[in-house]
Amino acid sequence: MAVTTKTSARRGPYAKGVARRAEILDVALRLYGASSGERPTLAAIAAEVGLTEAGVLHYFGTMDELFVAILEARDAHAVDGGALTDPDHVWAYMAGTTRTPGLTKLFVDMSVAAADPNHPAHAFMERHRQRVHEVVRMALRIDDEQAVRLAVAAAEGLQMRWIQNKDTDIAGDLEALARVLTGGSLVLTEEGLPETGDGLESQ
Image (cartoon, one colour):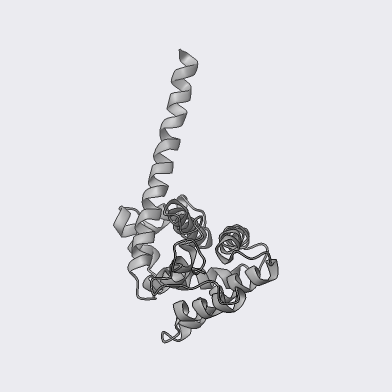
């Protein structure tokens, strides 16, 4: 019984820490999702969860690790919603990044920072691109790894361009690229979904 009691005592603070970290990420995702492009301050996140700035960083270590955790949480939500697992929804997911400019800018910033192999974003970007690569490969229905890499790179580049120029038509450019890469067989609706729901145009 004594062992069980000690184990439970250890699990209590750990479980609370996990829950608190998740709460911070939920708040950060909401603030970034509602941002028009300016990065929400650490002070704003801390105020929302009733902690000091140091208290928030206690759960993550550094600001960069917090930024990466926010993007990891965004990906987790996308996976749960099928956007990063369902090939019929990946185009809409990529085109829909314009609806959350704060998160898009954070992604672009971390993408640049990931060039440093020692930066926390480096490992995240490797995982993220692998997930996106696989679902885009299924969405394109083509056996050409180079074409898939081109599509993923183009999507990231379009996000960066959109940050600089909001007139950039990410959805339209992605549709044009999909048509080129599939020989015109992939047709997307205005919502970014395949016309037939199976990723291919009806023959």
